[in-house]
Image (cartoon, rainbow, N blue to C red; front, side):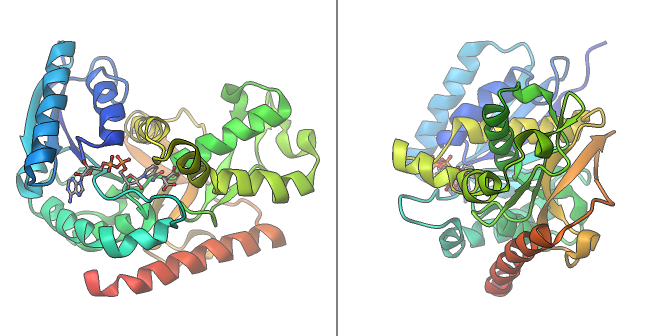
Length: 328
Ligand SMILES: NC(=O)C1=CN([C@@H]2O[C@H](COP(=O)(O)OP(=O)(O)OC[C@H]3O[C@@H](n4cnc5c(N)ncnc54)[C@H](O)[C@@H]3O)[C@@H](O)[C@H]2O)C=CC1
Ligand SMILES: O=C([O-])CC(=O)C(=O)O
């Protein structure tokens, strides 16, 4: 018997990431090849944006995806999020050359107050929310704080792009396949302060740290390359990363919904005090997922260098949180 369709809301649906994301959701890459979906698409109430959204919908229709059970266009989050089971909050301004993501808070922060409130009012009580719009961690924090009737654990931020970037750099350095890498972690903020940590990582059961055996490469090449990859892409393309961001969003939601079979992935999630991170800080942690729930990998040893890196990214997040008090 075929499954009942689930509702997937996507904001910023006519933007660059939206264009790289929607067709993959509709084809079953996110929630499984047996799971029909209804897309509830949100764009700003602006003629140009709504027209662009119409065009995207025409293309979705023209794909005749067997799993696409319905498509809706919205300009109000209160209708877009009605009964939604999944919400991918992408819609917001991307940064341009020379900007830091945190500079977007003043422009984008308020979007997430309104959208958090709307989710609180009308979404499924089990909605799984992923914030992609930058600065993703603090926007997810704003949305979570604006939705007091929904469980805080339903709100997450996207660190998966950093995770995938780190895996790709390690694969290139070791000459091994990316699929063989296990137990990689990225801690903290989706910003250059994030701490990609391969101390526990293995390839074919062997330690990646021992295989690379080059602490200078870790500190002077690997961490800055992963941390500044978004800026490097903006410098090269003139636009911020879109296909890789959409891919990371698919990975994040798929793993959360369908499980990771024990494999570690990175998600930005509200802390419950794990690893000394204050409660509610939206922090990148290594997690495993099972039965629609994520679980932090606990008990990892944090050495002095890691502690320093985690403190730096935490301090930045606390500063961002402090700066958005007025929005909550
Ligand atoms: N967390 C991550 O790893 C990544 C995050 N991003 C962020 O994702 C966001 C979107 O990026 P792009 O798709 O490239 O931008 P874009 O400018 O191509 O598209 C954004 C779309 O969002 C719409 N929008 C703006 N405000 C909205 C609102 N209140 N409700 C609904 N829609 C709204 C705009 O009309 C536009 O169509 C940016 O903030 C970018 O920085 C980008 C890459 C990676
Ligand atoms: O760097 C940006 O502004 C877009 C982004 O978040 C990324 O590519 O990681």
